[in-house]
Length: 312
Image (cartoon, rainbow, N blue to C red; front, top):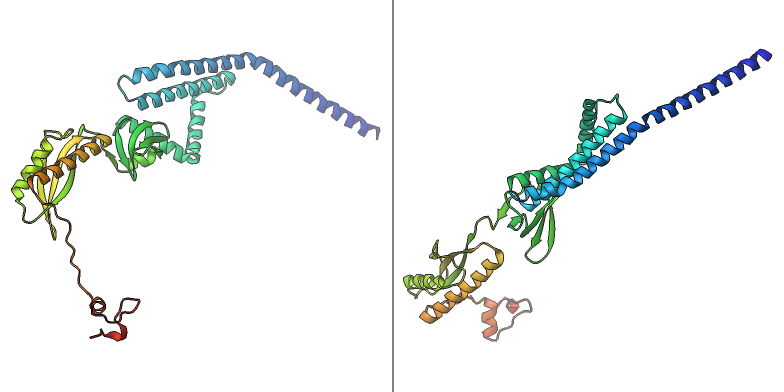
């Protein structure tokens, strides 16, 4: 019995000694690594500060040759890249056994995992970068994406910001913008606009065409080259339709104002020359119930002839 107690005491003492040795070793390792941790923190701070300082410099440099959205996004990416480089370098300093290749491999695995977890975010990020490089449109352009039409305010990392013509701010994910059909209204300085006016069959067609073109020549905002056109496009029941086309400023507000002035000018010119613009003629055919009602017959509330016949 005495031997068993002695063995237990020795085992307990041995365990305490091992625990003390482990704690002492861990503390010694921690104290030994403190300089490396300090250096790593200093390196990380240096990279962070460098990234912050580079951000406005890169932005100012890029904005000379690229759009403001391009400069803003890539300045931010440059700052993020500096931060990532500082983290990787700090890890290699704190853990000397970890090689940069191992850190890059781990970062690659982490990137793949993050790609699955944040697929939509990365998709929008890549689409935004491609949009900035391709530049199918720029900030200030007026575009249509799907059912959204307005002026592009900016392209950031995640979305394209559009201010609609009625003053609403719409954020469209870059992936949708990149894959959808884009109509860039202000891609060129001038755009063609048109409206249709109907003249009477009795009117002189050649004279109506000439009067319309001459009226457009004096309208503010109508471009002289290409010149305005007036083309007959249809024969309606009571009118011969004349499609009047002209080129004007591609900006939405200017286009609408020019269209307003053009319609007014053509209408005034037609009135002055006596060119009639008749209303649509609608032919009405009387039903049996209407005929019965006109002759004083009985008609049901539903509009049918009472008893299936009209009074005589």
